[in-house]
Each structure stands twice: as structure tokens, then as C-alpha cells.
Length: 205
Image (cartoon, rainbow, N blue to C red; front, side):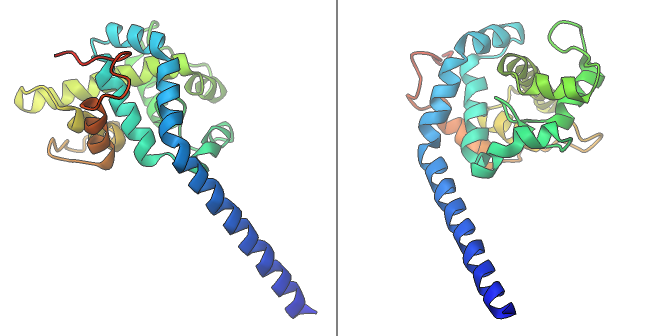
């Protein structure tokens, strides 16, 4: 009887893994078009908050593209729920960690772009709102740009910005290595110099 139960459990587990694999494959297969559609739909907010933060819109969406293309998969689709249950996933339009969102509010609240939340539930609501998420992530990339610029006086490349966006700069006094490169930065640079959405987000040449 026990052997039979183990056998049935094994079949069920195999079926679950197989179905999950199919879902993951389907998600990755269609992720390119999904990402492009998402960053197209949010053009107005991207343009507005990039202007506020003196950031080139194509640089910003290239970094977001790099983040989504490199790190987002089927299981990340549950990150919104995980955030609501108190975990610290990367969530929302720009895939920003809840802890980074809170770090920005603790250190850079200005009552306009970055505003103090009353509680954790409000933080989660804001991070899952595309407009607020774009406001915070554009501001965060501006901070990253300023930190990298301060190292040697040279404006950072898209690859450097994307790489440090994925790594994060809200880690206390850890030294920032401008030579650090990640898949997010590499894919961000590829997108920036591609023709994808070039009519919506032209390069500032």
C-alpha cells in the first residue's frame, strides 16, 4: 500500500514539474513581446519621470528591458503575491525590491517623487502601481548614475547603469566597482543600440 502511495505521489510530482516547465517555456517564449508591449504602454509616465530626473527615456527603458529579459521568469509572476505576504521580492514595472523601495523612502523622501508610506501595505501598493514604480525606479537610476559619475568624472554607460541596477546600491558602505558587469547591463546595452521601439523611445544622439 505504501509503495502504491509513493508511486502515485511520484506521478503527481512529475506532472507538476512537467506542467511548470511548459509554463516557464511559454513565458520565456513570449516574454520579448510582453516586455515590449508593457514598456510601450507606459510611455507617458516614463517620459514624464525621466524628464523630472534628467534621465534619457531610452536609457531607462533599456535598463528595465535588461532587468526583465535577464531575470523575469514564470515564478517571478508570483512576486506580487509574495510582496503582499511580507517577503522581499523584486516587483512591479521596474522589478524593484521592496527593501530598496523602503530605502528610498527612508533616505530620499521629498514629498513629491519619493513620499513616505504610512505602513508596509502602502509600500506594496505603491510598488505594484506602474506610475509610482516608474517614479521610484527613474529616481533610483539617477542616484546610480550620480554615484558612478563621482568615481572618475565620466558619465556611466548603459551597460554600467544596468549592471548596478541589478546589483543595487542600497548596501551600506560597500565599495562600488565601476567595472562590474551583469547580464542585465549587457542586455540593456543591446536594447539601447537596437531598433526596438526606436520610434517611441529614440536615442539622444
